[in-house]
Image (cartoon, rainbow, N blue to C red; front, side, top):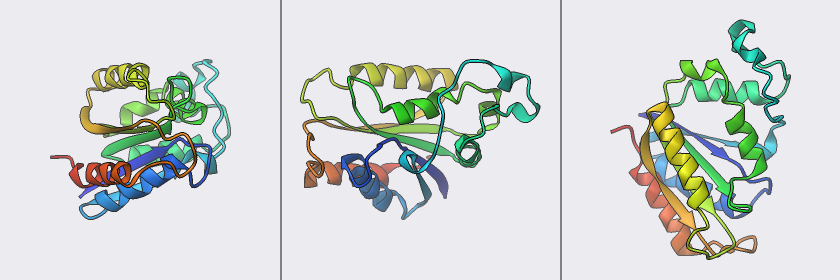
Length: 180
């Protein structure tokens, strides 16, 4: 059984990202141990680029915030799925703070093998996700991770605008995900 950690980056509770994550979890939990970290429930400061984590005991960040809890969960995960609303062609600032805080040697102790992604945006532009997908591929290459897949939802402007078809895609993504 794989251990999946979902990092849900929506600042809004019960929104489109949360709904997609809920359906993903329903699909994945049959053959995986799934945990969701909803970033809106945590206080995580952005990385300040001081590199003190490279010198400190246990590579701990000097910032005393909830990122220590996220590091702990990441250290136990086999697969990570990031989920985010798309704002101005990027992931949410809250999720970006988490990603940036992975600029630490602590990440070398993680045993994550695969990465997946769920994105939802209001616009219907064909290039809406291009910059995020580029960054996603760079992360896959840098960390030598396998791609578990993506769910990309366009045109969900209002809260609750994800369709049943969108939710089905998230559920099927969850069903398909495994270490094999």
